[in-house]
Length: 65
Image 1 (cartoon, helix red, strand yellow):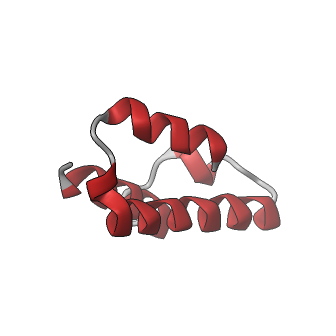
Image 2 (cartoon, helix red, strand yellow):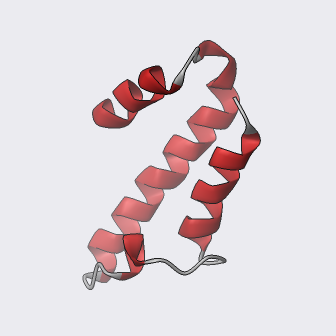
């Protein structure tokens, strides 16, 4: 798996790339929770990237996260 995908997730969360994904959440506590979950997911992808054979396996994990 390419690191590019994980890099994009991190850029969006930490605010380097401003997108509506998180910025549209007006409740600061809810936005922080979503950002935290997304960072944990990105961290897990980095650490466990070799166990995923294709994108469908990643999508399954996303739905459980």
